[in-house]
Length: 408
Image 1 (cartoon, rainbow, N blue to C red):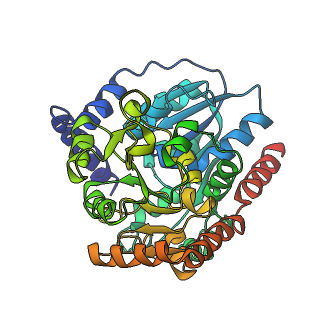
Image 2: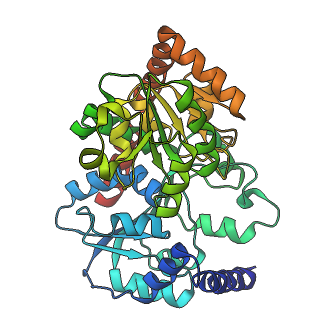
């Protein structure tokens, strides 16, 4: 199985290399790994995040560990360009790298170079050679905000290699009891149900959001619909609402902000109804423009404080993006049908604080109910915020355990 694993990784690298000729993300993935020059920090604490979402998820633990160990060097790695390119200059780290391809040689050289005394991976990404190298050197590896499902390879008859990868983990901090029981079913008992650190992150953000005066001016006191992390399939639906609600403001924060994507979104909207954020004050009067398109990165988590209803993108593709950021501000959240893998989305639906729509008619009917009935909208938003507050605290559980383990 290890031979197949190694061959699979090499095939994956070759495919990415081929795609890099015409795909920007693939090009960054290849280029970033070719240019790695490690600055040896002597000893370090290593955090790995698959992408930007996992960085924000694990950030509360990162911040606390950094505060508790101010003399330790912090090394961060990302697998995806969408995480690395946005956070490569984060002040929370002394060094930020792309994670090298998972080969025995790369794992040995990388671990030697950064010399970690503690390693924390957030939610997922399980790499045989890196985990094995850490295990062989007796370097503690923790998984935080982990979540497991029965259909994952770890729990299949052919998942022996992947179960071995899990055996290299010192301790798992998982989001729910089901994950704990699944790990127990494969004889892994080093598990704590801590919850999801994203709740701590979004709650901290909601308590002290970045104030955006230009957004306040744009809204002008009108009811506001915020569509966050949207993809084309989401935008085709939400754009239909703009004409239906001329008295409302709409803010789109697309998942991708290339010129092509932004122009495609603008083409879906009524003529002259939209302005890009970068042109908000110089080319348009914010009070007379109905739709704002955010064409930069990093604002979405603060935008929700100005909204009344949120639509979260991704539900017509691989899966929805972060619903908790909006929920923490007390907004009812709407998303597409592909949310089965997201516990928080299922919880919000069960509470009638989140709503899934499968087509244009369902979206129109739901938004009509939320816009026309203020009490219904407020009640859904209150339930969303309460759900977040009831689930904070995972960071404290994780950090307390790790600190005790380090003191022995």
